[in-house]
Length: 419
View 1 (spheres, rainbow, N blue to C red):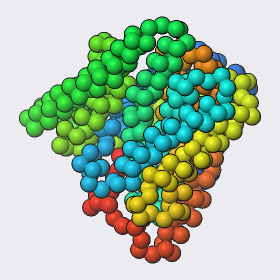
View 2: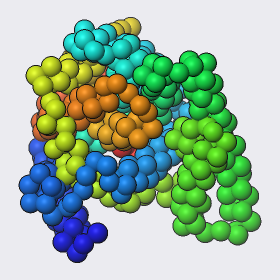
View 3: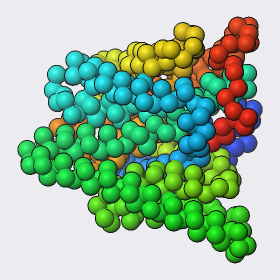
View 4: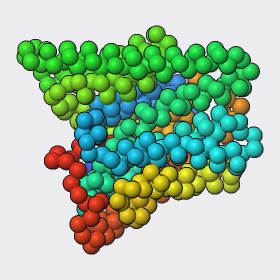
């Protein structure tokens, strides 16, 4: 990569770091700014970053980011606390998310005549995971009730790992339909992916956690070394799963979940990673999104694509969330708030790149364009509304008084990172 490109990538990181506190809570978020940086510096404008969608560096960045985000998000989920206190995210994940995929697939079949069932389901699954980082002002604003912030945070941390097996299965079936090959072969391939991947992740995460606990208790290792081990386990789980024909991304997620819930001491490094190195990778991904993905998608976008994107961010998300929360005691305005702040971002970007690389689909370019325009709409709309909406909802919750949304959920608030 040339010196100009390096400067075009690194100077925005410095500039953003210098004013990060100043713009915190405003309509200017990191994803918005870096998407714009990428668009301006990319081939569509000044050409300072000569990045194309086929560039291997882009796919490598996507894979590395996805592995680390899946592992670190999962490692910071306390399953015991989730079962005990988090009734809202559990309902949103186990009821709301499947409904979102089903409604999304139906909408895709109605709007796009050339879509097969599995392609429609694949599109809906790619757009199902949410990205709390695009609404950071909501999950970090203490005026918003802690229960609501935790619901969005936990949902975002878990839904990418939950969506991934469905994405792989739908992609396998869609590829089988396109290639007109033996469905049984694809079933076997899908079964290996979603069975061997988790098994590998469990083994790596459990053994890794036990080794860390043992060596730490014997004072053989320092706390800072935990970080190197965690990164090694994330990539080790990915590589071993791929070697045995399982899915490496599922393995990384399950390894993080197992590691974090087997190791008794807090993985402080993983929190720090999500706030520093992880944040850099995420911002660079959004820069690549603006430089290479948005320009390519815009050439194929139609009114129907835009309509589906708007539906995906509104009705196809908000209605399932409302239905999933019936009986929890939350007010309709809270259901609407939780439904709206289901931004689509990093996971959808990385998943669509993964599918482009590994699957053969009849409507590959159309799926890519729809996902990218939906994420672009989400980056702008959720980024600009997060701060004002958080302040409005927080003040409204205070006026409503002591209600179900405001009750504390545990003695120690959930502090895991968001994507």
